Length: 81
Image (cartoon, rainbow, N blue to C red; front, side, top):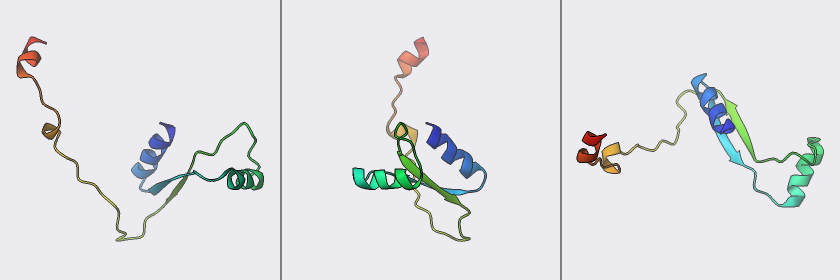
């Protein structure tokens, strides 16, 4: 939840972001932890890259389906409530 909120806040400030999953072999994880001096009781879950997007940069975008395509209201039940 924190990372999602952080990404949204960065976007609101005009920054482009990308979340990167950290799913690697133990040896690679341990190597990074050693170089970055990360204690054993902390875990790397992801990286977040951010910055100002280049003017005219292409960005992936998925169209949203209209709500009425997947939510159907029972009008009789709604009237009772």
